[in-house]
Image: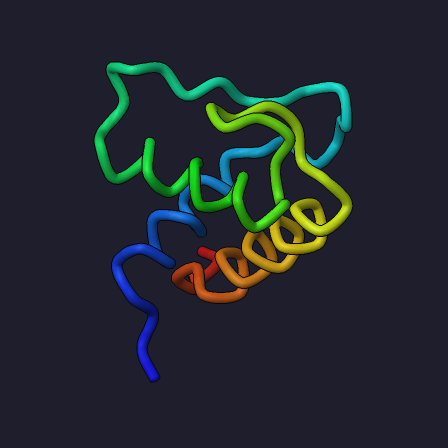
Length: 82
């Protein structure tokens, strides 16, 4: 089962969080794309972030962001050393 476009947008939001600091959140402004704004709202409704327009990761959101960021690194193109 492939990822839906909505899930891709949610993953895109999760990979934007800095996992090195729990004191750093994100703020999604009205000028963001409609897809991003809706993705953030869905993540809030799922209990993964603290505010409807971003905020901080919850414990569940942190786990999801860790997995999303790890998957992104695992799928990155392999570069050959010269």
